[in-house]
Image (cartoon, rainbow, N blue to C red; front, side, top):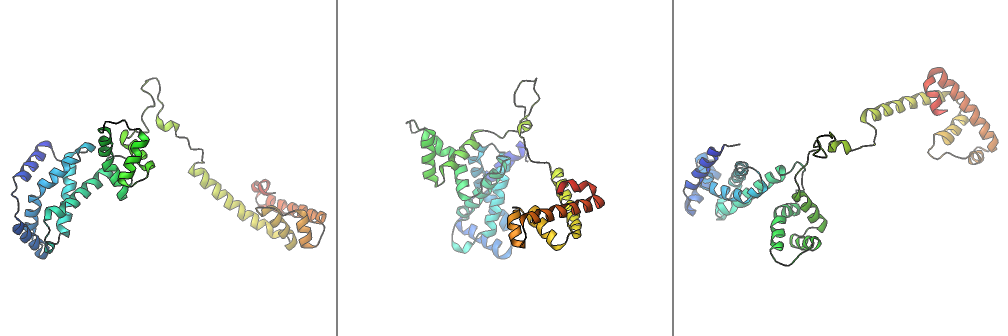
Amino acid sequence: MKSEPARRDMVRMAMNAPYLERDEEHALAVRWKDDRDQEALHQITVAHMRLVISMASRFRSFGLPMSDLVQEGYVGLLEAAARFEPEREVRFSTYATWWIRASMQDYILRNWSIVRGGTSSAQKALFFNLRRLRAKLSRSGAPVSKAAMYRQISDALGVAEKDVALMDSRLSGPDTSLSQPVADDESTTSTRMDFLVDDRPLQDELVEEHIDTERRSVWLREAMDVLNEREMRIIAKRRLAENGATLESLGIELGISKERVRQIENRALEKLRAALMRDNPAVAATYV
């Protein structure tokens, strides 16, 4: 960031730079475009720094350093020089104005708040015009409710009323640190962070549960090798399916009574329990 004396020198140099006549400007632009003449680029940019400074002064109300705004505007000026087509017979200042403004606006949107705002063209228009339109409505003399104000601004900018209300709330208050005390009373040390409660499990708990589940699944698949085909079919449909089948439906499917299905299921569970207790005692109670 430039010091105050350096900034004053830069402003003074820009204001003392000579204006370029149309023919002279065109010749310099051609030299830069065709020959990449750095001296031509320097003369063009120096002659238009007063435009950068003038535009930066229009955005001072956003509370960002003037020197930073000028630097960002200079970036936009260089971008305009890189894209300018002198054969179109348009004055460079007219073309560069858009690039300078866009560069400054992007900088303001990135740095005005730690919370990233919308970057669509509609959101940008809302951000940079809301205060002006709100002030204009206030100066009209007639009392205007917030709802009516939001509706008029919404119509003027072509955005939703809820977006106007949200942007108004963002512009009305500064960012607040989560480490800031909830009260000015020195007797309390509670911060805003203390009231952000998340009931979800911690990441290490989720990972631990995932690993344990995978391990138990492997143990269960290995233990099921002790079952015959019919026992495995009954256990899979009764115990491992999301919606367990009834004894009656399985009986019909297998051509046996539901009592017989219950007997086979109990026998299969005993076999599974014995296999699990033999190889992995800790997991037996979880599944059977």
